[in-house]
Image (cartoon, rainbow, N blue to C red):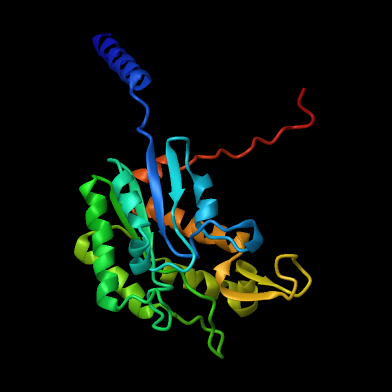
Amino acid sequence: MTNYVLKSAAALGLLLLTAFAPPPRKITVYLIGDSTMSIKETKAYPETGWGMPFVYFFDETVTVDNRAQNGRSTKSFVAENRWQPVAEGLREGDYVFIQFGHNDEVPTKRSYTPEADYKNYLIRFIAETRAKKASPVLITPVARRKFDAAGKVEGTHNVYSEIVRVTAREQQVPLIDLDRESQAMLQQFGVENSKLLFNQVVPGEHPNYPDGKEDNTHFNELGARKMAEIVLADIRALKLELATRIVQRTAAKTVDPQAR
């Protein structure tokens, strides 16, 4: 009888603690990166950055602030004063998801960032994020759609993706290897079906692209969601605190039409 009373009291105490526990603190998840992540203007539709569907995966305690911009590299993101407001606005518990590389790696672009500088900018983002007791997450650049003659997907970010991986290990930062994982997804879809993930339209199909569009870098709505789902799965796999704030959707109940 005594044990039963003690167990009941303990259970009641736990219930009271749970009932009066403060709600999780509201946080902001900042996305910094390039066009594959960014919010698109209406005139670009159906082009969609993966950061757009990403916002819908979280509960009301999370605000996703997508600062990614088309055509930006680590260098130009800093040079244009886009990083500094993020660093200044960070609060304890926030996250910064960092995905660059598409524009850093192209020598003919003004945004070109040599390999050593690319790494240094990543380290800067990490250090300044941590200084505010926020959490950096490094993401390798998402894959382009490129297949060889045998139908095997080819990497186009090999050097810069490896820099991200090395930096993540050295700085002990969570890594989402979106390059490798998105390549695997493209391989699964195959040469033809993978086109369904990208901003590809035939002439006359969409008023934004009257002459059609064959884009193997930027996603449509389906592709963006698939990439966002990869990131979401990795947030869970990495066991980030952010994973506890993912919306838990319950399956709809089947109603028996004979039940009254």
